[in-house]
Amino acid sequence: MKPLERPGLSLWAATANPPPATRPLEGERRADVVIVGAGYTGLSCAVHLADAGRETVVLEARGIGHGGSGRNLGQVNPGVWADPQTVEKHLGEARGPRFNEAFGRSFELVESLVNRFQIACGLTRSGNVYVAHSARAVRVVEERYRQLRACGFDVEFLDRPRTAALIGNDCYHAALLDKRAGNIHPLNYALGLADGAISLGASVHTASPVHRLTRNGDGWRAETGAGSVVAKRAVIATDSYSGELWPGLARTMVPIGVYAAATEPLGENLRTSFLPQRTSTFETALVPTYARMLASGRCVVGTLGYPPLWKEGPLDRWPRRQLKRLFPAAAGARFEFRWGGTIGMSDNHLPRLHEPAPGLTICCGFSGRGVTSATLAGRIVAERIGGLMKDEDCPLPVQPIRPLNFRRSRAVALELAFRAYRALSWLP
Image (cartoon, rainbow, N blue to C red):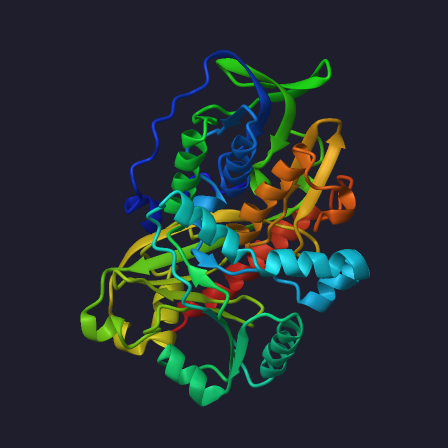
């Protein structure tokens, strides 16, 4: 399935800071590095390249943060979906611990960039809560807690009474409180990264889709409809929005839809009774529900799968059903925003680092952990380009591009499963 192109107005877009002044690329430019994609990966890479004195040009097909960077739920969760032991199984005894350490402390990088550029994005380190949706799932939460503690991370296991006290609802059986984590306005973070990159001398061109990326002598040429950039090095940072820019790249990930809805601002008595510490939750369920209470008093719920074609109708009861389940006192609140986006899911939930040709670097497949993982990936790519990170020191192995078998069938099957799950909310 293709990335969602008509996602509906998101809460983040409606409350975004003014974007930096950008314009489409015109004519031919020369640079040290050309980056395709102005999401977290590309913009973090641009910041770190500009820091190193590299002349950098970022080309974005639409607007800054148009893809998953501007439409996610704003949870700043370090690490990846896979448990540390699973990571070590995939990456080996040497690289696995290096990966767990680097990605497990990625919140600090996000925080440092927000502080450095004074990005007004509401970043909080309130901790996020991984909740057991059933009695059987308590073992899953306990095992993740054990592994994270073994890595030295600041996490805490909560029994049912303590979970209920933290969330304001006793529907969950236990939880893991990840004190490393927090929340953010995801689009404002992307806009702030763009401002930071520009302030360091990088150029960012929006409304500049790259139609061709080809070798140009010992460098690269990125062509748009109205211009081109010739550079020594090229970076593709488009994740699930890669299209056919590089052969086989889009087929290395399964595109997964994400659906979110936000209520109107709730009264003071309501906004302090659900997630009063402004943590956010994500469930152990096969199709998890995510929930946040914003400082503005809006409650946000999200899940996997694309939004329905007809919103606000009888076939779109899922947000209302979840609000009633998680926060019964606000069950009658009006939903003001419903939107969606696309994430790129790798087969093992680990990011992919590719260098398929001399001078070309690609990082993608963040599998729903983009705020932290993509920001770190941007720095990793910049350090590799600058010669500051050798293969043996890199948390990510360089892998060949290997398209997934039955990728389109997987995407369709998963989307149908997500919709079937949400269809249960049609029932009274």
